[in-house]
Length: 269
Image (tube, rainbow, N blue to C red):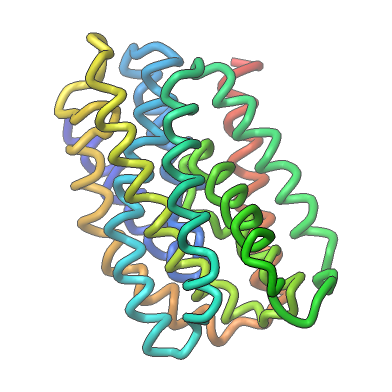
């Protein structure tokens, strides 16, 4: 038990830092860590992956608040884009989390790996973002679909959306640091509805982990959140001092780390 507590406290330190630095809510660390721990405790792939994703979203609810405050102070949040995208973000989270809670853990692992590899490759080799517009689209319908799919895919992975929203925003000529700050806001609106759905749908699972409310493990959420809230501020402050190429490569490194660890655990060991 002591080892588990230390693992999740350390996970909180790292995930909080990433939440502030990259606007991803730390899910790229929380999900595989929780997944590996639960597998080693004897839980099935289904339970482990559902709880990992749901608990990650629960943690992001807390870490994103700290990160958002820092980014607002630094002037990195574009409130106009937030207003345009927030409805699609919320609906995408609700539908995505409902779908995720009703498909197998095996499929969720595959989805996580495929999407993470695609994102990592893009971030690693594309040193300069592809600019397709000088600003976000003016069409309300187009903005809805863009934000919907960002949220929908993010909640399937248990991440805060930065892996999708940051590169998308940079394609619309939004500066990387402003994209990261705005993405942190989206992380909250992705995580909260998603966590609520997982709480509801997980109540039908009789083999769920201890200390859980549905698929959200309250013990994991508490342990990770305790330390992650402090490091989120540090990450947010550092993000404004790092050049955009370095920031994108940090994205790629952690996403590739996630993919590699999941592939090794799931298909090799």
